Length: 90
Image (cartoon, rainbow, N blue to C red; front, side, top):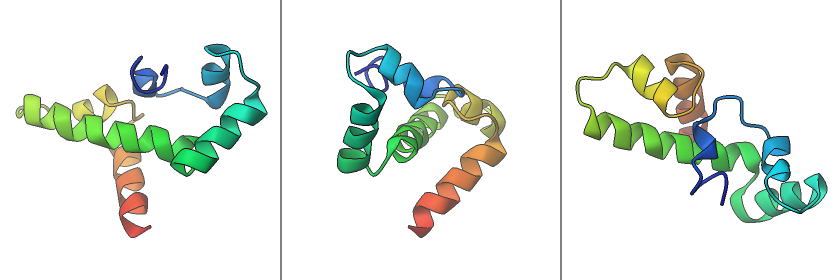
């Protein structure tokens, strides 16, 4: 819930340990759940960020790509582009 509904994915420094700190489960269990149900923690977070980027650009048509990437939890537009490119190739 913290990552998605709580929009924790918007934090560019989000780590699995942050998620563990918001729940009562062990790091091993949380990591297993993300891997089993979502293909891994990074994959899940980046998928949410990509969706947010598209929504942000639709709502803010004059925003720069850099601003949209940062508002979506990416460090930069380059980071956004690398993730988008990698996930499209998978």
